Length: 114
Image 1 (tube, rainbow, N blue to C red):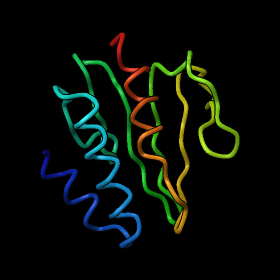
Image 2 (image 1 turned 180 degrees about the vertical axis):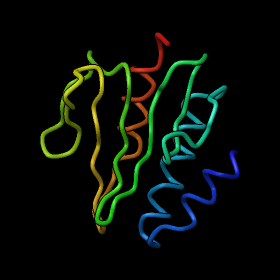
Image 3 (image 1 turned 60 degrees about the horizontal axis):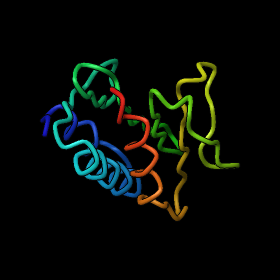
Image 4 (image 1 turned 120 degrees about the horizontal axis):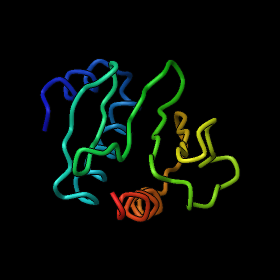
């Protein structure tokens, strides 16, 4: 694990630390040979040199963006398309229950062809 990413996560609010660490573990389990690095000030994860996902914490949320996600269905109120249709983002807020199993399935499907 990348030390810069660890430092990024440790500076967050406690609930965000928990969410980000859960997402980080999810990524490593879903994409075994993933490369983790801090890029553009956020944790990015690459598979075979291609972006797979990114974690971003803001004041009141954590976003988990999945790349190569054009073929994935949106989930109303949770997993939606961005301006680039090949990117979809799950937005997580404090106290929200998160289906990490579902996120892992979405990431696995999106990253399979990378």
